[in-house]
Image 1 (cartoon, rainbow, N blue to C red):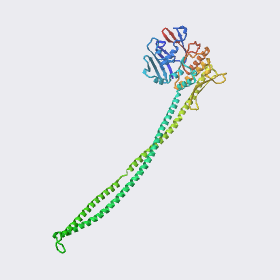
Image 2 (image 1 turned 120 degrees about the vertical axis):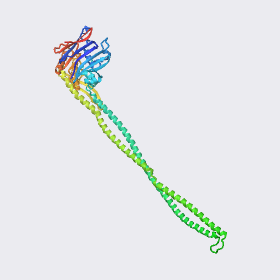
Image 3 (image 1 turned 60 degrees about the vertical axis):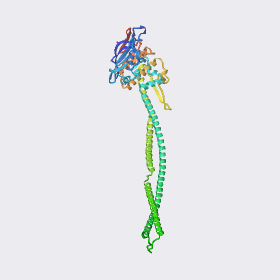
Image 4 (image 1 turned 45 degrees about the vertical axis):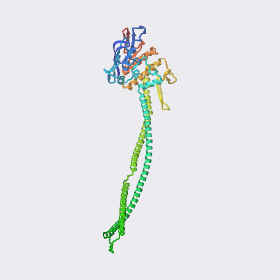
Length: 524
């Protein structure tokens, strides 16, 4: 349900002071007229009829139907104003209060924001204008240019949701391509690293083999030298042993000859020269023995050094083995990263394919919804044409189409079929009284559609000055149509007009009086 019960206002434009007005509770068509006592020559104009509707619009949306806001809505000579609108939206009972100077907004005595209020109302200002209150100075749906008509239709029906989703899908698809490019660049770098790592492993393997060969050659050389040293040591050991025997023999001979200076054979004294030779031989043998011992000690040192070198070479680790292992581990990591990058690219390709599909898919869904909604709008509008005196007339809507380049050609056209016309004719070609009836039919259909989409059943509507370009007959047709609409749908419809409408089915007449004290409302 969507119902407005009453309004309270203080110092709002021509309504000076405090006022309260309760809307009729019974369904029917009510005539809201005026009486300008302050300036009788204006008749029913400039009384505050439309202002009474502006009170509601300003309270709910912060501006009037003509865009007035802030200090422009305060009564002349006053410092502030306030309005309260009591209404029901669905299961909610709301008391919306707005003031100017200070600028405040509250719902059920709780300060709130315009955004939160519109969520509670379920209707934005445009939807409200075309579903609840058709303002005097607003454009009828049919009067809008094709592009503007489509924009309004899309906004009210929230059809741009699908364009936003399409745009989001397009942005996501572009982001996926950028992400894919980053992965492809990473993959190219990884592949370069992989080839470099393979080359490094080949070079290190060659160096490893060369190192092992060098170690084996060094070991072979050391072992050859060691063998020679061992052979030399063996020869020197034998020579040392032989020399040691000679030394001992020389010592024996010297001892024998030197103790008595007698020859052991002939027992004659030994000449000093012979003894000298024996001493000399003994000394020579000792020197030779010392030399051999020294050489043998040096040989043993060389053998130990060779053995140490051989052990060192045997224990020498190949440095390239560790480098190869590290490089192979790095290569394995690179290969894993390559596989991960490939998998990521494959996943991105799948996501991009799906996302790209929805770039056009959301647009197609929107077009499908528009087509279905337009058929419903056509039905609603055509149902109102006969009651407006346009028997055998019909309206057909056509809307945007996706062009060959993938874009959308904007446009929302209304084609009118009328008796005697050669074929469907664009709305813009019509004039005179028929146009006002067509406007009303379009507004009726759109209002029904808006409320249905909002999930609301509207019980009150306002039609402000719908009589433009109409004669008395047209006014009666409009009144009859609004009366039937009020009765059939259980609505309270307020027809605001400055003309005298001689219609006997009005459920009541509401008169706005304006005098030197300002505007005020009287119910008859």
